[in-house]
Amino acid sequence: IFENVPGAPADVIFALTAAYKADTDPKKVNLGVGAYRTEEGKPWVLPVVHKADHIMVDDENLDHEYLPILGLENFRKASAKLILGENSKAIAEGRVGSAQCISGTGAVYAGAHFLSKHYPFKGAACYISKPTWANHRAIFEGVGIPVLEYPYWNPETKGLDLKGMLGAMEAAPSGSIFLLHPCAHNPTGVDPTPDQWKQIADVMEARGHFTFFDTAYQGFASGSLDKDAYSVRYFVERGFEMFIAQSFSKNFGLYSERAGNLTIVAKTPEIKNTIESQIAKAQRAVISNPPAYGSRVVSLVLNDETLYKEWEENLSSMANRIIAMRQALFDELVALGTPGTWNHIVDQIGMFSFTGLSTPQVKVLKEKYHCYLTDNGRISMAGLNTKNVKYFAAAVDDVVRN
Ligand code: LMR
Image (cartoon, rainbow, N blue to C red):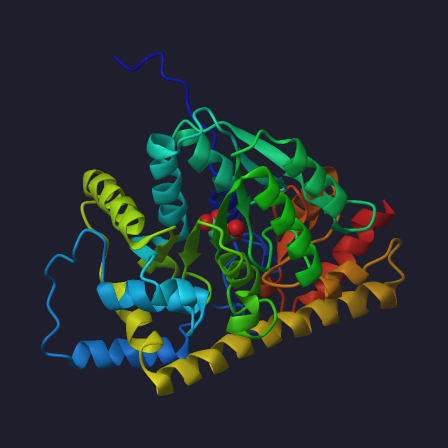
């Protein structure tokens, strides 16, 4: 029956992890997947998560019953508050809804699926940044929404192509969907400034586009959870209706637990209820109801003042180690006199650096030096540590010179 089915290509990021694992060279370096690593190159269970794990094990009232279709209520509310702010007017007005989803991917999917069924501008495309996280295209195309790109990265300045981005927003048919990264843009590590966000919001408003934020790195960009939510809160203040996909994989280190949320900012409480009802109907048919463990951990921490403070400290220790590695890589490249400018490595923020290395250079890094990074030159900074940064810098120096 299935002899004519063509095989699908492997996922680039997960294929990189597999290739790294299979590599037996002791010098190998994993700069592929965006997952935090310690100075020893090991995954990190955040101490606050470890604490929450123990609280849960000792809780005799916890059971393994189904969660509601839209997930754990305290988790959903706390997630919305985390991104929209303690004093969010939209929350007070009762027009903020949410759905617990299978991490960020599931949240983008839930929102995209809803739009594919109920977005009134039929045939509207979703515009994604060029470049973006590869799954964005796959998710929107998967639900039948055409995907187009807006310029984002300027290879000459190694910064934001604001002119190109605004131009694409102006030119897009009114009512298009724009997928925006609120902070720590993946893969470039380049974010708009508050003034640039204002210009983006002006065009989005004038053209009547729909805003779909996807945030996986709140807490990794500015060192403050509130500052990292600036763009989202600014758009909400200006009255935009929007979807916000949130992942807790990175900022809680809960990668495998798939804890995520779709926050919905609607025009009225009634519309919010309708959207939630449709998402619940769709979610029932796909996952029935979301998994409990990760959302319980997040909910415990977000709803407890002491644990929350500890979480902030854990987050800054991750962010600070990454910043230190940016500096170390930059210093090594400068010391080697590697041709080109490398300031962007320290200027970019979040988990990634978009190095500007070309696909053929990446190939040599992989094959000759056992350094694994995505073909577009993105490196996950967390894969660097004081023991391998010199080795990686020397490898980069070699590929750039030859
Ligand atoms: C990444 O970009 O490396 C992460 O978001 C992991 C993933 O799911 O692709």
